[in-house]
Image (cartoon, rainbow, N blue to C red):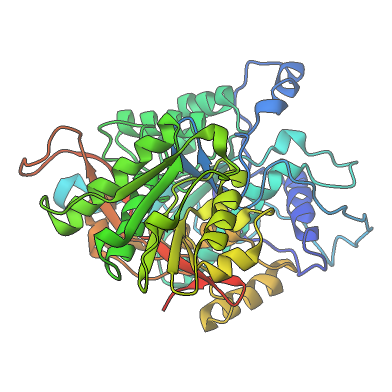
Length: 495
């Protein structure tokens, strides 16, 4: 299955191009969303819609059960703008068809040029399968709007298509198939069992839902095919699997990045770790204490810790004065994210507790950027910082250029998912071309800055193998994180 070129002209309206993309696919003689051999009935499938995607909210969201991040720009259940139907002449806006010029030549069968280290095959072309939750089975040609949960995959795919075009211009030959996971375990299972494109793939990208990621990771381990997970930051989805590449840093990586940034500016004695006195939050403090040892050595005293009783979230009886440094800076680190009220209460208490001679800095989690209750004046006056694996500078020339190209093509501005799809596909395609099918073993040699982040992958070794030479690889994880400071009433990259 080749990924075909989008022939649609730019359309007005931020959501209109998404409708026409699905509309064109519905008319195509070769659907990009191959139907899986699903044994369930349509009635059974409709009953699954309540669990189509994980119940997560916001760009950076933590799973309190696992203590890890899950990435999503648009909430899958978010309401979409209503699309007004218009009758458009077919000759002016032709649908996507299989006869269109594609990104690759379907007759181009990959041939081995040579085999490098780790059995990496350098080929004349490469097969890539994208597995995304398009929910094509929920598309209704008579409806006036797209199924809301399709938006996330469509935006990712729109950015990916632009990257495939760019890779083609660079002379990189790729055979691409695009498959619909429907965020359904049974569908993904059938795809992995019987889909010919996946069976021939040298690289798989996606899917979204945690269980789906786990299934594909197990398949990649079993079949020895490289797999990129763009969204899940859970570190326990696959064990002893060097074919698994995790783009989103884990919670531990965020804690390590915050610790490193704080220690670059302040003494460990100035840092106070703050959390609710709950087991899952208390356990997170160990990430910071371990990171302190990595940065400063075994002899350094641990960070001071403040554990607040969950029954006292108004913080009325909490005395912060003993923690405040007179004529110096106190750094408070709060690895809390699931309770916005607690974060708001602490910031308010800190604001009224400090004096003009107390200078404070607060480090928080990425989800704070999505908070709605917290007064941004607290963010400004308390010098709030957060970690984030994404930073899109709206004033950067390359961002503005991408926005113009994206709008010219789709008649809409790119979302964070579009940047993600563009960056991951562009990075993966270049890595395949340069290092072959096992390019993950050369990830540490490439740290180029892309639009939404810098990819800085590292090996995650098997537990219990510390100190061994040539330690076995558990998986690969992107470790790069930005530290954003709230300044001038917006989060921006600190100087």
